[in-house]
Image (cartoon, rainbow, N blue to C red; front, side, top):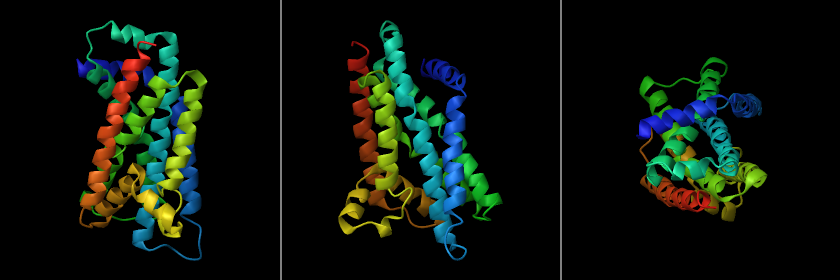
Length: 240
């Protein structure tokens, strides 16, 4: 049942190619710009952090675009139709969440390819696989946030909420600016965001560092909390 619904949502998503252009353009251009700023070539650790940040930035933007699409579905009556099917709430939310996460794959791969081919970032096969896997799986809390907004916020407002959330999380989470340049109070806030921990774990895997259990726990806690938010949003939105 879940696989059938997921296939349906993926087919509905890929029919609109506009999201692909937007999700690729911003992270690719910004990665090329940021990675070539500064007086000299970055260290390997800095290059990996830049890669994780820009790939995460692209993934975040792609996933947050689903807020507007879900709001439009609600307006068209799609959510009410789903409520009439035997699909359980959890199946609908999980299926739509995985479909949203699939949108993150192109920008993650595009930025990673640029890092390897253009900037000469080298890692072992296991480090590449670990980083890419985490950059995809770790976007779960953001996908759940996007779903919740889409289910609860009406019409065009959902697009605005998604865009503002995308930019705010990218900045505060440290995807665009190294948190070492933050004021102390902002750096502490950043450490409690799922996006900051998402980038940290991906970078640690790529650099062969020991997994930070605090970062993992923070990411898992946000995933669970925002999944509950998405479920509540669906139940309310489908009956609105």
